[in-house]
Image (cartoon, rainbow, N blue to C red; front, side, top):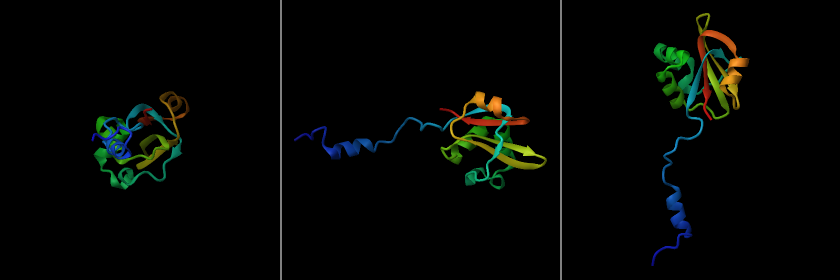
Length: 123
């Protein structure tokens, strides 16, 4: 006969369908000329300064579409709410904010940086 809809096997099959919606926190919004105050000592492998070429660093620093793609693909830990890459006296440095943060908070509390900006995780 036809399986009852409450049959657990049927439920398991339907629950393994791939999600088409994006997971929360995969998109990033650019806030120019402000960066967080805390250094990010342990970015994912893909974002480590030595792993990035000059074009990637510039894209991340300037907030363009390539930078956005690099960030999305890097798998930034979910407890990190904002990140920034900047060039400080010839040294590339990552900064971050833990937890949820929004654009206004970065604009108010961030350090000024005319050459960079901050990627804020969208809710």
